[in-house]
Image 1 (cartoon, helix red, strand yellow):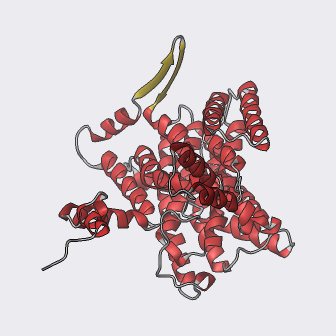
Image 2 (cartoon, helix red, strand yellow):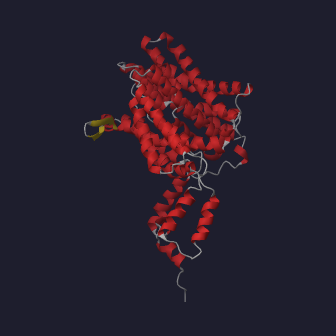
Image 3 (cartoon, rainbow, N blue to C red):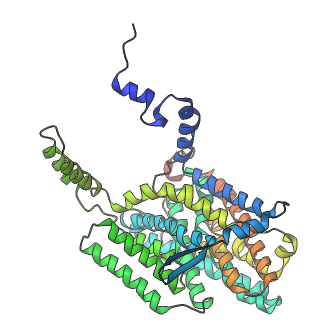
Length: 468
């Protein structure tokens, strides 16, 4: 006679967790989805799939689809309290609001690396900063040279090829999984952040007519308050949430890209545990002496265990899935819908050629040259386990301009519909070419060397550090 199943076996067979049961829904749906989301490159797959959907949405010859895309993403959504009203299009809420979560996760990653990782070394941290400067100056110079013989208005677009789209660049790099050294990923991440900050400063100085210094000062004051509270070891999470929302709003009102609030707050987040792990261990031992836990002891134990892990790590683990599987695909769906009509004329125009050459050629040349000079002069240090061909490949991937470039294009040519369309097509095609060339270069480079002595076939879980 078969003995009855034990309690753990019964729980495994019948639940309570769906993915642990033997039900068909769990075996054929829930567990495959869980395993897909556990792979690091899954977020990149979703990001690229959303891009393809957006392009098909706009370019398929179906009546009303293209206009439907614009109508949907430009639907106004307003927040209203009394006489106060904030109204933006759905696309702006995605770009200025939802994407703040992604930039916050990026700021958390950089903060962790500054405290515990490779960026603790000033020379290692200096290299991507110097590389970002080179990756902005050379593309702008190439664009200016190419458009000299074009329309006079075209010269205003010199800022377009300066930008690196951090979401798409890191997403494309994520497709390669562990084939790329983690130090090279961090190099691109830091470079892209500095690049985006540089592009936003360019927008603020050269392309913004209504920059509000008062609102900008208010944002800086709120960040200073957050830093002060942290120094006084104020642990109430909701206080920082409210201050973070206020910082985002003040930056939005200042005319500066509001997603910078995410980066700034991420860099202010503590990367060192507030308590030693022994504190939680000793309290647990004392609380369990009577083999029982009451509600107060349980609450206290949860607090002590949580504060034994750095806030940066806890927030990364919680927000990474949201960033990879929700924020970035929605972002791509909202921004990748570019019409490809007249693609031939647009690509061969002065504006299209300038943008294409700036992103595809200027980015890797500027980044590689800046890295070489920085290392040669002793200012920077080569990322661990990274070769020069990999640096070139990362520089090519950094040529994916896309969203920030599209934003600058809209500011560069006000009232010039033709130049704006040429710029958008040039950005799209150049970003695609840069992504393909970068992936091919990195595959060729990693085919000869295994990063950090690890097998390239294994992929890291999505909740690991450095995946975004």
